[in-house]
Image 1 (cartoon, helix red, strand yellow):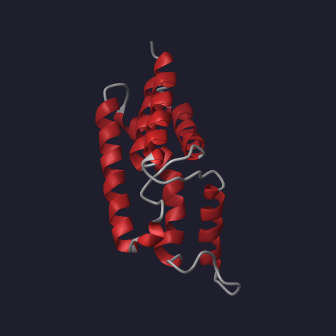
Image 2 (image 1 turned 90 degrees about the horizontal axis):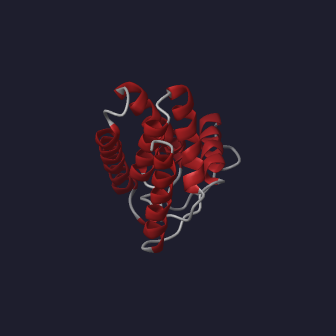
Length: 161
């Protein structure tokens, strides 16, 4: 899922459950549930672009997503717990970023046997998170993402009515 999708669902979680003791772990868990749905995001087919281009797209889209979610859901509770909830929803992708940034490339899909500790750790985190990924190409992956976000918004809106 895009960072924007994760952030919007996290904002809805916080709106429905404005206690960060619950909203933060739920937002973190929602990341994996959402990523299990077939989806397209800027990481899909990243090996066809330069790391710089992929990184700039990911950073820009993350900033847009956090900003959008914050403005959509501010006023529904305190700002810091809302931001903590949104950040928790993004955290799994940020945890796998070191693999992409420092070690992976178009031709390298896993560490070599003599790789160092940090490379192996980064790869293990990447592998763990990707257990849940179900990626697909656009446009189908965009439609499924919209449907997934819509489902969560409807589900979470039921609790606030």
